[in-house]
Image (cartoon, rainbow, N blue to C red; front, side, top):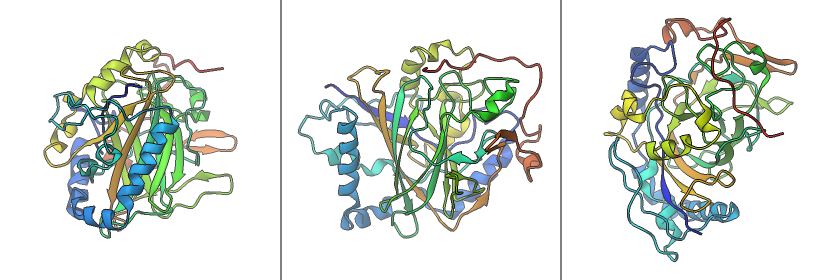
Length: 372
């Protein structure tokens, strides 16, 4: 089977060139980013010998290769990754041989970086389920993800850390939130929806794996996924996470070539919202000179994107456990359904135009269709 490895562009960035999420203050976010970078190294190069000595590299390679095989992929005819600056394509031109050591593919140090923390955005929801498969009935390109969390001060994996993930569906809709800038406008029933949101606890190697769908786009933002780490999170008895303390809150971005390819597929092609390219995201452009903002991926259905098999992507994230802050939730999920959260402290500084919530009478594109 022919598989191509390129890149899932991964940057912990907050916004496109004009606004991160509508209403956010660029200057405030830039200050947060500078403060975060002042607290940490911007990569994990200093950990390489420790990873090798402790066998972490070998276990990482074996785990990722096994996952690709489990998903029906192959290591034959992979492409070597290059790391040019945006806007160049991130797809390499050098092919691996079928007998290439998987270590060359799955454990390169070029993606073991710490990129800057940003805001959680206006669509973070408290009370999401602890689960690995967050797709529910959403239609889209399957995206299987492998994340590893490393303590940058000790180079050790962080065990029992809760990783929270959320992203829009193929037509640019976040579940659990109602806003004129979300893809369902005034549909308050969306507060009760939970698709493409979930939480997982890291294992002894600091690893979690998720199954989501490749995200669509919405106006003003480059295509991205949100990621948050809860160092001391404690799930409730109903297996949900309500922790508002985060050691990391960032976003994953994607190679523009990959985005353009998937955007042509149904149901992504039905998304009527305007597109924002990576080249219009000033924060992404600022980060590439000082950090490697990309994670790797392989396609699982040959050299073309297969709607049934999708992609496998991986990323190693360095965090400093000493860095912790309180995040803001746009909504909360209760047994009886979702509710907009009001009275967020600090929202005025982060969202000077007002924390984005429901605005009656504002229409928007229809949400993605779902499987029955």
